[in-house]
Image 1 (spheres, helix red, strand yellow):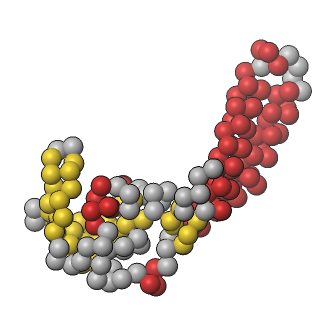
Image 2 (image 1 turned 45 degrees about the vertical axis):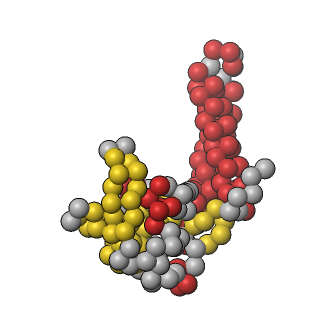
Length: 155
């Protein structure tokens, strides 16, 4: 069993708990009812609804188990203790690359969402940023080649 710590912000933890509750208290009971209703229709070997509902129930149960294991391993990123001078988990970092500025938040891998500019501390950019200070430059290997960034600010 993997006992790796799962780093989350308070918002990330709330999102996982909300998903767990939705699955276990709403979706799972709905699908159990569908399985039962489909089972009552007779011949299960030709009952597509029964097979689909049973598969969905299996998926939901797997996700609930996964979430329960994750929640046991969570370490909350204490945003009140985040350094304002060096990049660490939970930091919001403004970077300059070729005159273009972008802001990223360094988060744990389970909370990473590139569309929301949340990058994992285990991603190439996240790893390169950790421990760096305002004014420092980093270089990250990307599919298009090396990209140079300068840290403008850390919050």
